[in-house]
Length: 548
Ligand SMILES: Cc1cc2nc3c(=O)[nH]c(=O)nc-3n(C[C@H](O)[C@H](O)[C@H](O)COP(=O)(O)OP(=O)(O)OC[C@H]3O[C@@H](n4cnc5c(N)ncnc54)[C@H](O)[C@@H]3O)c2cc1C
Image 1 (cartoon, rainbow, N blue to C red):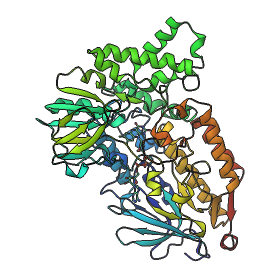
Image 2 (cartoon, rainbow, N blue to C red):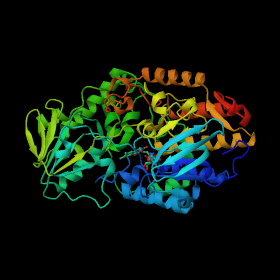
Image 3 (spheres, rainbow, N blue to C red):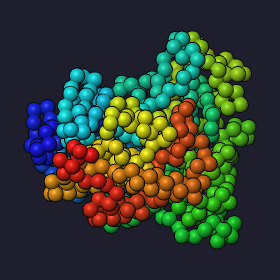
Image 4 (spheres, protein in one colour):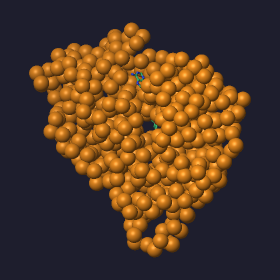
């Protein structure tokens, strides 16, 4: 797009903005850009909208942030009209909701499905991005918004012999739309993270025998899911503004009651009572029991031991219970899981838990898999092996900024961003819930809305003042990266080999990617940056930008 083209003047094959991804983030971004009068197109690899909720159709898939909170807040009418049926909605219901949103706000006409963006290149002369897709599209856009998701690049480990398996394999993050019937089958599930913990009780009910291959036991809290009571729904309708404001002011953008007390402030009996009460409430409530659970090892130990004692109480066979106890990392430093009947499932006769750390998987065979100890005959294998989190989807696109430098190269030693929203050297490119922002450590719908609103505000500002480009400065980026690391270093988080530090992807640099300073603090920082005329960003007019 030539310099003199103003935002809003769409040319053939040119947009004010291209958005990549049609999940919660992309859909709301499109809505906001429309509101600014900008032309925009979404490219989405999937054959439908919904992102996470389009792809993850494994049995038992549901949110673990309560649905009243895990939903958009930007439209009062939407919030008043939509009725969630359960405390934690299932995947089909969330997908219906996102389709409803896309239709209600007439978004679908600007969404091109089944189209993967393969490259995005910044043209320093014309100050625009050229976006190329696997369907042969080649369009230009003044702005490019990556709404590609933190958990959208499924990871299948590189097992020897995987191609020789004669049965069926599935990844929880790419589940067949028609569903899978495991009745009468011997099924292996590899992995025991969130998706495994949700799906295992359901697969176990169908399979003739289920083998769970566990490398790292996980902490999981009971969801206490159930129908959403009309009283709770009505209370939300009446008080939604207050609840949303409270969530925005909370560390994880969640309405869990966060105690100010330290674990050592109370007697062991009172501590136990507090944990018990929060365990009874279900979900993430337990994590708010004391203020120092994620910063003080001793406080953390009390919470971890409480959960371990619960696991011992739920699993009949002490040897199996022992294997299920997470011991080598502090509680909450890997994504905490929320389950319905996970641990109790191991009391069935037709399930076997294999410790894949003690007896590692050596290869997949034509008829199953072999560990260092035994051969397992399997009809199907489910890879619940997670995602190349936070950076995977971005680095899969050839994103070239100034001087042709790729984002992948720039991030070869770990992601570097300013506020998790922009990257120095990549003008007019925004990353919704990018690394360096609270993202996966918060209620992500709130985090997404905050980013989208901020980006929309920034684009409005550029238009009013006739700036052609906005770009994070190297200094601001360096300071932010140092701050993100410093804050993470003050917590117990870096102690765990989690996907937060990329530990599940061989060769990925070990960097704590999300921002743990708290959602409210972060939001305030973003607002202040904007109020100070986008401090830490270089804003240039067309001519200046071209000579940058
Ligand atoms: C099983 C599961 C359960 C979850 N539960 C919760 C929860 O309870 N609470 C919570 O806060 N978060 C949860 N999350 C995190 C969840 O990812 C976010 O809440 C949210 O859905 C992210 O929305 P998004 O739009 O940012 O990304 P996504 O929903 O991941 O959408 C990104 C989209 O971008 C597309 N895309 C990526 N690259 C390209 C490309 N190159 N070209 C075209 N399209 C591309 C993908 O196909 C995808 O559809 C969960 C995640 C998973 C996997």
